[in-house]
Length: 138
Image (spheres, rainbow, N blue to C red):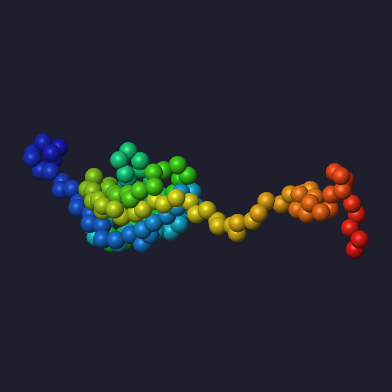
């Protein structure tokens, strides 16, 4: 009934200052992340956003100046920079542009090797005598 009398409860104004993790790779398992700022009030939503793509930060615990949670990067998300969004329980919201970058998976580099052929005559043609293998004297 307070709203009927013209009294409106002010919306909080959270302020994001930093995020401890600024990049991750597609398919990364959940990692701890910490967001520092002020006026955090029981955040109901903490996520990374790029257009319609969202990556939630889960298992949230928060104080007025710190939010802790877990961030896992799904396999199929665009590899770009994402905005960090914090929405308090009363709807107060802040956004931090280009706060996190999703990168491609790391492909382990292997030493280039020549293909191994199982036919010894392909490696040393002198072992062939009229299409047949000859035995090696040693």
